[in-house]
Length: 502
Image 1 (tube, helix red, strand yellow):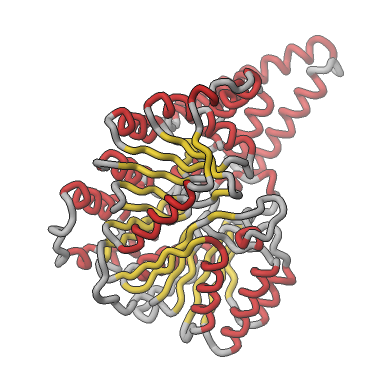
Image 2 (tube, rainbow, N blue to C red):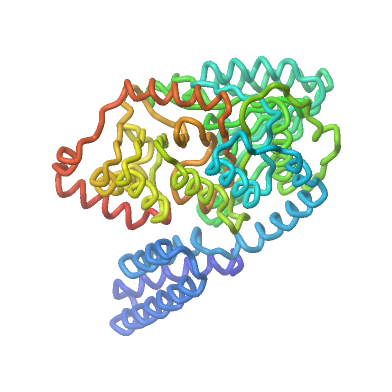
């Protein structure tokens, strides 16, 4: 359905509801609006049903339409349709596949000896390579960066050493103190002749001013904007976000993980206080995968295709331990690669599953995997913030806790500040680190990127940080949790019904 027709229909729905329903045209008008509203809800509900969505998403949309018809119809026309997704992202998927065919990643895996890994780990690596379409590397060195100070100091240091190009992609980029400091460094490097491509999400970085961006353009920095919208409140594009955080420097060094660019990530915000997060420095072969992801996004946004060898020939690191794979995911990926890899990590674990996430809205597969693991005797722990940054996901997350606690899952509330790390650890040897939360949005709507680490040295640091974080938590007891006021529990249950839409 075209955008103009959608807006016209929304206006018509509001007109009929507010004018006819309140008797401006008498009893006959009220009857007309009732018939129109009923037929519209039925037709939209049938369309949702025929789209063969995830069952929980289908139920949530239909329930919203039945209980709040006007609100449900408007939200569906703005956020719920798959038309924009099919039209735009199918084209992106086709272009990305052509890129992978031209840049053959399969040849990189031919000579790898997997005998150093356990059978379960070998199975995981083969699965992730097949469904994510990216290679795993044994010539990559990674370093975990704990919190903002370590992340931004390392980032600025590497940016200042750039010689050929800097590629930067963020969901949120703020023009505050740290944002200005990075901008200053980029302008200095551009004046030295370094190629710089800077890309950001139009919704996440809504506050970036034209003045700030023009200062960069004037220095020769190329700007790419994902998801441009003329009318923010009237665009379905708002629902599909580029949540990735990627920086690639000279094709040999890269950064990825949970931190955007903003002073709050340096614990300078009075609202959030201490900000606990995890990022990662990558050097070597796997930088190539991050570069390809950036260049594919860049082509999608700007139309420029620059897949030359000068961008895709990283120096290999020697003497590295374990395997590293960069895993992209997004609404253009039908296979839901990230969710399937998370599921495989959980179901292949033999001793423990440790999870840290600021938003916990799993589907039934992942929820069952965690419950069964705990019932089977595995050490299953979830690290979750004690205070929210967004109330609706926070309430929805809590609705999943009782069944997990009953199964023996240990849930810890992080009390030192706000927890934003996105980590999954199995048996202390396998870990995933990246931008994806454990929620429906990350699995189905956002463009995300994560790193799968198997027996890499960085896993040890991730485990150490997780154990240190546990010292600043309070474990939730089922008996105390169930003593919540009925109103609060009802709010959590209501939020859970909307969780597939969050």
